[in-house]
Image 1 (tube, rainbow, N blue to C red):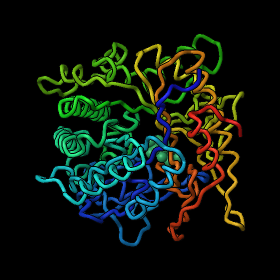
Image 2 (image 1 turned 180 degrees about the vertical axis):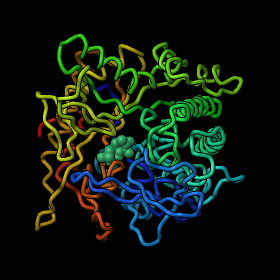
Image 3 (image 1 turned 60 degrees about the vertical axis):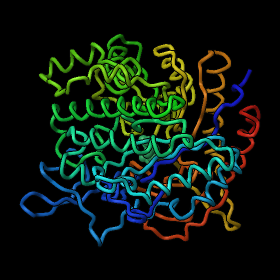
Length: 493
Ligand code: BG6
């Protein structure tokens, strides 16, 4: 009963939200480094400064507004949250020690492509960048922590975005292939667990992955998706070639989803949404080909993908070893949503659900949805699974004595672990790990805020960049420690 022996317990971060050192050690610029902070509670979006082909400048807050041919740049008078972030680059030893104290046996982190290839497509890799991650991985092993590495987490090199429109271009796939071969070769024996592309179902739509017009152009959007799949399949294939011990998974933003009512039209609306938003991406990466519903959709839209010889075979050869996903909330869908109020979510919007409440940022909280997900995913693919993101973004208060009593976060984590446990014990799904998101405070991807905190470890920094970056343990730190050290047996709050 309970979680299997050797279950992986840890936490998860992404380089562009955590590392800082944005130009240190030979790192180049990523699109993420050109995106400002926003204000999620008041609906103020992150912005990106752009230079247009005629030399004029503009600023946009929405990916759909990026004009053709625009190039993003860093404005020296503007504050960019990723430039220092919470400075893992200079605190990695101290931080990994804290992770070990919490009882981690896995730590999910991403490699910043521009630390390895500053422009994305350079001739030679940057040795200082390679050495940085080697040191980090060795430090993890010192404490018995397995690194779980995301190869690509929202950090397209700026050069590839500006000059090639990011993933719209095959050039980016070729550069990615070289980057993958470099890191698999260098970290052979140090890293066994890998994820190819973070939230691949959101990536093609995300401002951080190419700053040009591809979103408003369906053909380009589908081409970018195709290239992400080809890139992911190449990563799996190269990873297995370099070391057959490598265990490589996909990563999908997989919230639960429900029909708004038992009206069959609403049920169908939910099926269509889930195909489009989630299953399509799992179907391609687990089965190795485009599902029929997607082929029909592209046929209707007149989309013809540009493929290279061998691409279709590659998709089959590059199917993943396991399914990983982020889980924060659930969404509800109706055939006629016009008069139903909407709610926010992890990069997506759905309708209100009268049975559930939401976080301060409007994300629906739904622990049972996690169990539903684990069942649905396992039924569909029968692959081992890992929950690689989950958590509550909330405002924390530092008490006069320095303590942070985040009982709301403890409750969120507790309730989700309880449902994971039911999925394992009662439903028999094959779940092998859990890495809650942002276990140390980092910059929010969606809003660029610091005050939207997920951590069990507090970092002293605010939305304007003030703070001395010192780390302190929140109440949830001790809760996690107890849960992890008991392999999920002691869940009492
Ligand atoms: C996922 C991403 O979308 O959700 C993370 O993989 C992100 O990068 C996380 O940080 C939480 O979202 P947010 O917008 O609250 O940071």
